[in-house]
Amino acid sequence: MPVNIRYTPALKEHQVTPEPVYRQRRQLLQGLGLGLGAAALSLPAGASVLSGLLGKEGNTGGGQPLTYERPEAYRPDLPRTDEGVATSYNNFYEFGTAKSDPARYAGEMKTRPWTLRIEGEVDRPQTLDVWSWMETQRLEERIYRHRCVEAWSMVIPWLGVPLAALLKAAGPTSRAKYVAFETLHNPAVMRGQSSPYLGGGIDFPYVEGLRIDEAMHPLTLLAVGMYGKTLPNQNGAPVRLVVPWKYGFKGIKSIVRIRLTEEQPPTTWNLLAAHEYGFYANVNPTVDHPRWSQASERFIGAGGLFGSERQPTLMFNGYGEEVASLYQGMDLRKFY
Ligand SMILES: Nc1nc2c(c(=O)[nH]1)N[C@H]1C(S)=C(S)[C@@H](COP(=O)(O)O)O[C@H]1N2
Ligand SMILES: [Mo]
Image (tube, rainbow, N blue to C red; front, side):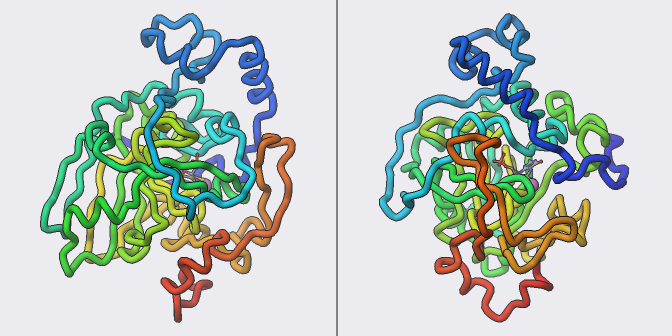
């Protein structure tokens, strides 16, 4: 793949503005009764008049109902983000740099079957068939504050299992200090991987990492669904990471490999722009991004992008009580 050319991407996150026209068209089609989920899904790929009409944004998979528990501890009294916004305003550079690209193009990705490899510093390396594994899991619904693209925030009901459960099953060795994650690499269906321009200059596959104590923290979720159903492709089907006290880019999507390591692994946004994105990426109102303030954020609630309200950013995204101890004694300006 000739994708290893490094250059500053033409479009950085903050430069891509919301797309009201796209949203309105979608809402109009929904109003006309052209359901974007089930209807499009039931049509054979390629033969869909509907997906042609919609510019393919209907064909994004997901939406299969899941069985799950609802632990009280993870049901905060917060207004949820409208599902339609959470599934249409995304970053997933494998499908392009615009916030509407993932919903438009991620339907090309086939998520069945899907294998997830767990390897590296573990006693029991595993290759999971994700869909059958999912059926054996006790899924939990967790309503988390979600820091999505740059300074936007949402509240999303995720479905998943603590990542710790999976890691423990593989048996981390005493040398396991970090956990590295990797997304699918398939330029044939991921158009952003087919050219540096479409992929914003990212050197794919997309990779992320956590320190092992962050990965084992009970809040850290391996998500397989949202809003009661399997993940739509644009949100990272069939399996993605959710770390609610960190910025959105740590939430790596469509994971195919988890590797426990002794050394701190490279991470995609840090490789792309090290002075802007660090390894830790903890939500922190006192450490600004070089190009925008992190003191406040815009919360997208039930009213969608237009009804969004500016609110103060909370330290560790509001999860300080649970996670602050992980960073005791660390200079969070240095380890941003
Ligand atoms: N594989 C992959 N994962 C990814 C990204 C990506 O481009 N590729 N973008 C990240 C960024 S920058 C953000 S802000 C979040 C957005 O996730 P969301 O659509 O669930 O809000 O996904 C993250 N995970
Ligand atoms: Mo992001």
